Image (cartoon, rainbow, N blue to C red):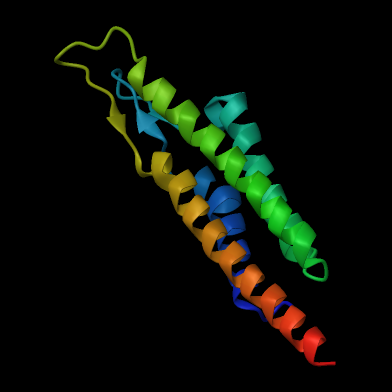
Length: 138
């Protein structure tokens, strides 16, 4: 059923990680160059993998357990992406007072994605509990 609330959450994750991330800068380095997702193959692969996992999970709505596990894997992928961003922001070398890099809103996209995936998993768990309770009554 595509009309469930977790489908909306998963679609939002797909839109954020697959489409919005292409247009929002991750950070601006000291030379005033805007760094986007496509500038680094690792970030592009992680963003694309997260978008693909959310779409596969969205289309696999008939198997709630597999959907739940895929969302967990997507959360792990987003935590890796967030760790990559933290590592990158902490190991910036050669910054001087005149040329300081600025973090962009794109660095927060994995956090938003993780929150939406947690909400989707909570809704999947509620659906699973509802089905189990109905099965007990039969």
